[in-house]
Image (tube, rainbow, N blue to C red; front, side):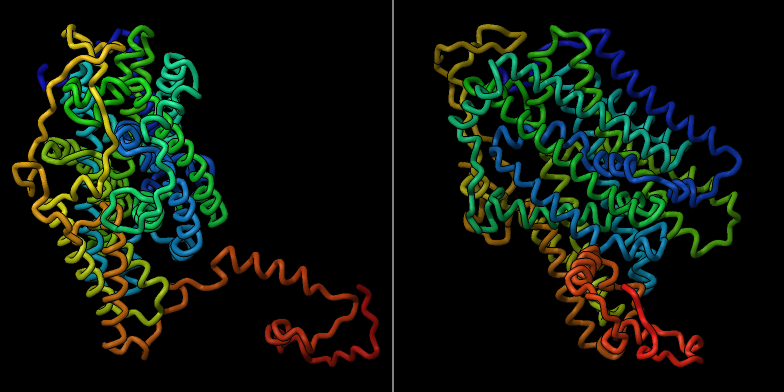
Amino acid sequence: MSGDSQVAGSFAVADYLVIALMLLVSAAVGVYFAWVDRGRGTSRDFLTGGRRMTALPVSMSLTASFMSSITVLSNPAEVYRYGAIFIFFGLAYALTMVITSEVFLPVFCRLGITSTFEYLELRFNRATRLLGTVLFIILTILYTGIIVYGPALALSQVTDMDLWSGIISTGIICTFYCTLGGLKAVVWTDVFQIGIMLAGYLSVIIKAVVLQGGVLTIISDSQQGGRLNFWDFDINPLRRHTLWTIIIGGTSCWVCAYGTNQAQVQRYIACKNITHARVSVYLSLLGLCSFLVSSVFAGMSLYSVYKNCDPWTAGMVSTPDQLMPYLVMDILTDYPGLPGLFFAGVYSGSLSTVSSSINAMAAVTLEDLIKPYTNMSERQLFRLSKGLSFFYGILCICMAGLSSVMGGMMQTSASIGGLIGGPLLGLFTLGILCPFANSKGGLSGLVSGLVVSMSVGLVAVISPPPPSMTRPLPLTTEGCNFTTTNSLNWTSTALPTEPSSTPTSPGQIGDGKPLLEDNWLTPSYLYLSLIGVVTAISVGMIVSLLTGGLKMRAEARFTLMKEDTTFYHLFKFFKDRVTRPTGRLDLTKDKEYVNNIDLAFCNTALDLTKSKVRM
């Protein structure tokens, strides 16, 4: 059998109509907000939605921004190959929301900044701000290229859709509604697109459940195939996925995305107040967990359907990222419109993430690279913000063409985010939690974090971790029937198959073994961001202490204060309930009250022995 992927089915007219309708509605949202805000827009309103957004749409937009096409395509394939331990990312999500809400959100909302990198200049200096801005733009462009190119490639090889029509249509529609409608259009299209993504997932899951005879059958097949590998407590940091790797490394990766990434912070500061921002963060947790459960069960369904005949090993698809599209075209082509719904969900994932990236890059470019060095009118800035959205939209399309050299979508995106996002997260954490950190420490920590994380990432590319560390689960083609050429069938009779050859990747010798079998410089890809965070904070603290950091303290508004946290107010509330007065008023024991007395109102003596106070 040929190793080339083969088309399992073809699109019907109804499928194209569903995708076209999704793109049309997305574009219409941009036109609507451009019309509503005509003649009275400012650059700040364009980039922050006028700071009048409420919690519900923002929470859905937060979910959609990073629940991209990677989630729809790669996460089920990850479960199919490595097991359902992936579900523990739910704990990482929960920890991420708590850290974001309690540590980063209060500071950013208090300062009312448009770009997160404004904080770096306020806290450290302009050089740190510029370096952070440039790194963010590089990170976002690389990430966005994968988001656009990966799904288009997967779909083109499994369906009869053209590769570049998928790339260009995604880029043009994103650029169109971002340029016209700004952040409001991005948020409200995200609300629409997240519904499409969930509907596409559910259509595949429901059909797979019916085909396999019920949910219990899928769970039983996954159990027998070793996919329910939840309880792996191995602390070895070289292991790809264990409970600790996912919770610790996964939390670090997601705090990079939710805590300090411009695309997410821009939504927090678009809310009416910090209460709406906090509620939106915790509501987005529900959306993230919904997608997580859907993707894990979709991966289990994928295994249940192909447990006896793996399309990837059999050469019917060329990469694991194509498994979900292959399943869709295999089981849903008899229902015109449903394949289109799933692929509309895939493109919705691309649109939601790319639009967020375009808007975020336009914001940081305007606020960090243009405004401080020019004296433009508000009208000129407004037009320039639209022009920047258009420019970055076109740039994302071009970058998609360069993404073909990269590997699996999920691991690649996480690795890129960790290499650059980790040191940036470390820098923000240093500034918010360490009042003695100075500009020398901040800049040194950022550069050191980049050097270390880039070095580890380079070693991981040269010498990938061995199978003993990644531990892919067994797949088989024993039940395949290779007598047909246009589609893949399977039978209960085991047929003899040729053993599949293992391709040699960079950094491997002829037998497929890594050059450095026990290389401790190739940890799990999830730890790349944590390495950058720890390095940046450690070096930043040491350099700050050595350069007189203790002699000067940052302004309180630039650091986290106890009054900023929800935990402080909850503790105070319960403490007040426990120590509630029992009927006697003694002002001498209420030190907080006495300290806050305004002396201007103390011209008359208060004699409590002559007064009666009723409680």
